[in-house]
Length: 331
Image (tube, rainbow, N blue to C red; front, side):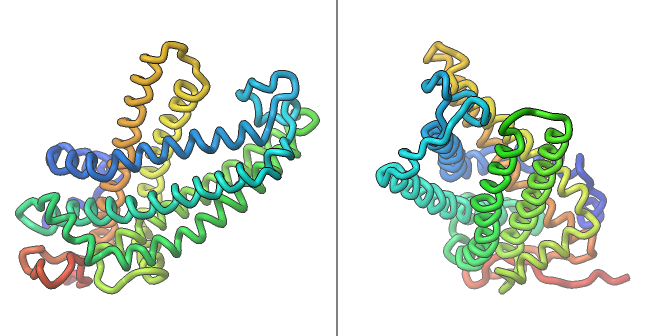
């Protein structure tokens, strides 16, 4: 009951503090998870940035200096490379890279979500800390419901990123095609902020839905998404603030990676490689912190709505996957 009330009172800073506390109190366990799952995810995310810039560089050429790709997004200085878009080789390569990226990210995301959700939940629900082997053993039991939830939200995210994203990019290019103006800048900023705000909301609901799928019995897909959204009521501001901070820091790391590794702002190869490795490790930390924070937010929301959770000691791990049972606390 005391732990329940502590979680119930956590806000923005409390959630972040609790997440860091869990990570550093179980350094060995989370290090094993990071080495096995999160390093590959971090590398894949950064490689995705490289391939995206490669395709963008080939799609838009600088009119004056074709080899200068730092300004390819500015309409006044770039032109669309029709021959590149019509090239079967590059289109096939793009499709192959996207499909490979999505499959690898999906598989690793499911594995990491299950293991970290199981690990974090066991800390709150059991007196004994779980092990990496025990957390990994939960994957065969829990991957199907999480996969269904992932695919459902992924369909929405795919439409948002790959349809509305390019549409927004096209609108911004048309908006600033001839010249910049204050009104155009204001409109561009408003559209961009709205796009990011919806993206953050979708991401938050996605993460909550996957945790619900991992920790609650027979709740997945649309039911998990709805349950996650309902749980966030009352803690929405703190949860959004946490995700905005994490996404901003992650975007900052990605920007630094692009400037240092891709755009060669540092000419010395050894330094670039060293900085690149450091940025990948920072990305890993952001991924780890995000996965732990989403489970912490889940338990904070459960406590806020006075929904208790049973101890792992009461469950048979050989027969039943870890899940949270709903039970209203007595008033």
